[in-house]
Length: 208
Image (cartoon, rainbow, N blue to C red):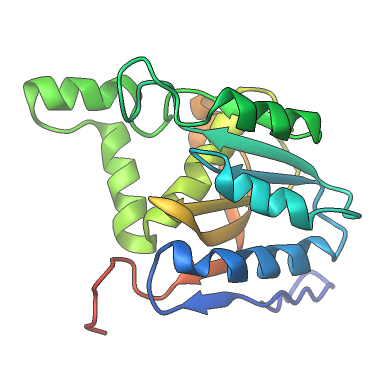
């Protein structure tokens, strides 16, 4: 990306993948590490339900001045009363200095329960589906976890840039530099750079 018109030029490469999925995780990590080495990003938000993807990032962040925030799914997301991230994994992340956020998903939350029970869809779910359809599941997750981290106070909000990583079910396939916002000011959110993204947004898609 080359930015002009402000008296400054900023170049940052974007990694494009043929399709979404966990097979892109290692290359996403490589690209994110390269972006972090520029030194202007101090906060990294990684979506990681089980913590496996977060641990992969953690092993590569040695010597880089960045604060890692791991956003995991809320308890009961897959099975009532159970959390996907084990206490041992969470303890390991915390012992290495990472912050862990476990919270209801801001782009579904209780709205999904109402839709399942009564049918129809909500405005919140419409935003989620629009992001997913236009830019992919991983991109939607990047936006969502940044808002969740901001609402939990684990990243700053305002005129600050944060690198956020998401994926499609497992692993990572998308990364963005964003200006985060709280949920109650969602439309102040900005995506400023796309660091990595699949070209095709749905698995098995072959049409251009």
